[in-house]
Image (cartoon, rainbow, N blue to C red; front, side):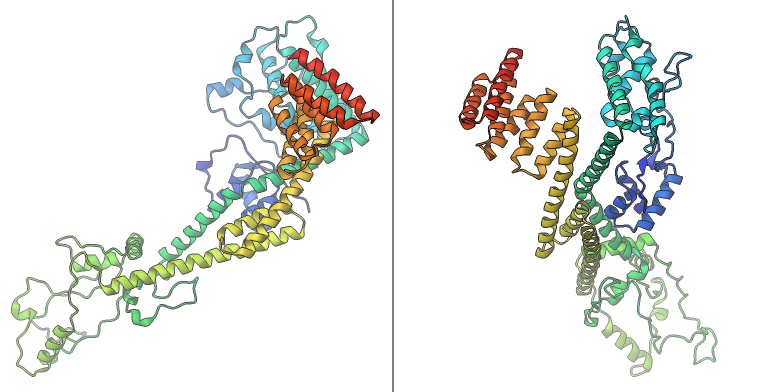
Length: 601
C-alpha cells in the first residue's frame, strides 16, 4: 500500500472554507511530513475516512497531495509581490534558470528567509539575481538533492546530468569573474558546491542508495518526532470534543427525558418525583366533574352553551431550542428563572418547557370564577378537594425540593454521559496503541497511549503501559537520529550532525559516546563552544577513563579560550594513555590543535 503525504497549500483562507469539525482537526495536523496513515493514527479516524477527508480538503483548495503542483498563491500585499520570485524572469534573456523541483518551488513561495537589507548591498548583480541567490542559499539545508536539481526521485543518470549542466553555469564562479560580489561570493560558492555534491551523489549507484536511505530515515525521524510532540495538543482537542459531544446530546430535545440518557444504563428512581420538571413535559390533566364536556355544552341544559363559562386561553407556544438550552442550564446550576411582573403563566411555562393548564381570567365575575353550590353537592365537594390538594407556594428565590432533586438528577445524567464518552475514547485510543505496537510503530503507539492515559489518570495499568511505550519510542527515535547523524558526519555536514547527535542524547541521556560526538561535531562546525564544553564534560563524567573523551574536552576548552583547563585535561589524557602508542599520538595531535585554537582565540 502506498501512503501519500499531504501538505498545506500556500495562500488558502481557512476561515472561508466550509469545514466540518473532523476536517478542521485533520487540517490542523497536516505539516507536509506526516503521511495519510500517520494522520489516521493521530486523529483516530479510519484510514478510509482520512483519505476521503483529504480528498475533500484538496477539492476545497486547502492542501496539496504528492505530485500536484502547488501554484503561486495570490500576493497579499505590495511587499509580498516585490519579494515573490519568478524563475522565468530572474535571468537575463537567453539564459533561463533551471527549475528547482516541486519541493523547492513550494519553499520559494513562502516568505523570504533572508534580511531584505541584504538586497541593498552595492554589488555588480541585478536585483532579481540577488533574490535568487539569497532564496536558494538560505534554503540549501532544507532542499534534498533531487529538489535542488529539479528532478524526480526516480530520475535516471541521464536526466540528473542534464539537470546539473543546465543549473550549474548559473552559479559557477567563472560566471562572475572580475565582478564585485561582496558577501554574495561565498554564497554563490556554497550553492555551486552543493549542486556539484548533489550531482556526484546521485550519479553514483552506491552513494545514491546511501543517500536514499538517509532521506527515508530523516522522514521517519521527523514523523516520529511530530507524533510525540503534538500529543498535548491532541489531548486538549479530544477533551474539548468529548465535552462538546455531551452538551450537544443534552441540547437535543429527545435527550431531555427523565432517563439518564443514551450513555448510561442507570435509571432515575421514580420516587424522585422530578420527571415532569427534568423532561419538560406535563402530565395529562384529568377533567374534573365540574368541567364542561368537549362539545362546550352543559349536561343540565341539553348541551347548550353555558353563559358563565370563561373564555378559553390560547394554547402555549412550543418552546424553542434556545428556551430548552436556557432551561437545561438553569437546572444544572440549580437556579430558577423568575417570571417578570405582569408576565403570564403561559409564557413562563413555555420558557421552562412545561405545559401549563389554561388559567381563568382574573377579571372574570366572582360568580363565574367560583359558582355557588349547596353544601354536599358534587361541585362543592370537588372545590373542597381541589383546594386541599393545591401545593403550597414556594417563596420567590427559594428552590423547592422537587427542583433540587431535578438538578441532582440532571447533574448525575451529565456526569454519566461524560464518563461514558471518556471510556469510549480511552478504549478507542488503547486499541490504536496496541495495533501500532504490533507493527513496531513506537511513536504512534506512544502518542495513542499518552492520550488514553491522560483521559484515565487513575488507571495504574494504563499509566505503566504508557510510560513503557514512551520509553521504547524515545529509544527508537534516538536510534533513528544516530543513523542520520552518522551519515551527516561522514559527508562533512557538521551543523546537521551536531543537531542530530543532540537528539540522540535526548533519548540516551547516559550515552557517553553520543555526548562526545555532539562536542566533536560542534567543534568541526565552529559553532557554539559552550555547547561543545557542556557535552564533552558530560561524556567525561560518564566515562572518566576515556582518553578520547578527555581530548575532546581539552579541545573544547581551548576553543572556548580556557587554556588552563585545556592543559589540565591534556595532562590527564597523557597519564591515562600510558605507553599506548596510538593514544600518545592522539594526545600529541591534540596538543598541536589546542595551540592553534589558542592562537586563533
